[in-house]
Image (cartoon, rainbow, N blue to C red; front, side, top):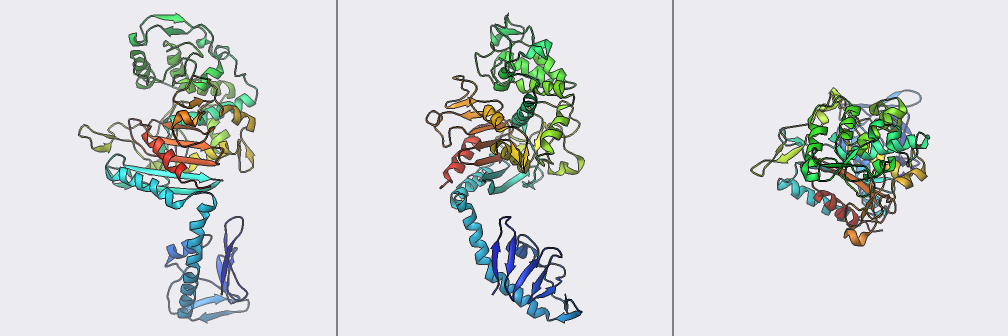
Length: 484
């Protein structure tokens, strides 16, 4: 009777003295020590599930052939079909048991994760989101990967696991990691004033009244902005999202007026009043754009080139970049919103997927969930990915510790360099771990990395305006599924 086992690389082997075994080189199988060359596949999906490391093909014809060391002989097709059906039936329970227990071995309950699936399906059914893609990893293994609903509602195009999403502000952690590579190479100190490298940041002004807009009264900075201020969103810059008149003016100038390149956008930022003095507040900002410009100044390359060479290629992130190639645009997932009648629709205004030349640090990257989890895995592994060290473990520690003291942006939450950081679960009133780090994107994309639990979770939708609701639901459902 054939038996099965897995080796450490999770490849399936079928072995017995007189049964079947895999031939890696030729992709055929041995039946009673005779190589059988199987023809075109039917039942392909069934056998591919039973034998995940190779495919068996069966096609009922008048005769089959097998190859021995001496000659070619005929084999009874009905005996062959019967043998493989018997083999399949004997292996299905073992394979099903393996699928059920593999996640449990990582301390994750499949049954409890089903609550997450049910929630997302209900949100889609009730027209709150068009679709959703989830990806959860624990101990370096994928334990949950689902795609529900539509990628594009107007086209009735199903959400695909290889869908390409606007990352929006999930660009920030990637650009921050790239910037810290240059820190490791000695280009600057974190305490250096930004004006040392970008003179336009020398004599900036701070508003006295944010509600008076960009032309309101100002005062000089009381101290220089440092690189650490940029990394932690404590420089006093704005992202244009705060709702004041000055925020609105900043958003219009940065994102609604034409910008030639990243230097043009950063110069616009430097020309506008700051919300506050450096180090005196945490204020979500366009500071990562300044990091992007510094990357170009230090490296002599565009941000797109630097990211490709130093992050995307080493991490095998083949679907990530500031533009989507023609051949991959069919995989693009557009953003949706509710119309005046409260119905979910494809947004009338969509950001361009090609021709983008402002390689920003705040937003702009496209990516897949599969690509993004590679970046998260590198971070979780203290800068290492498949034997390649992109960042020092000490640098990762520095990036993911709270750098803002009591200047928290939410209860129980601090901020490191490029990531939010959970500092107090009692104050946060949510499931998680102290030391968890995370961020999200304006089109409702979310991720977190939990070093204590060796856990990564990603949720991708494309919905505007932003809401933290699905971020909180992701955490709630993923953490409640941990059983060990």
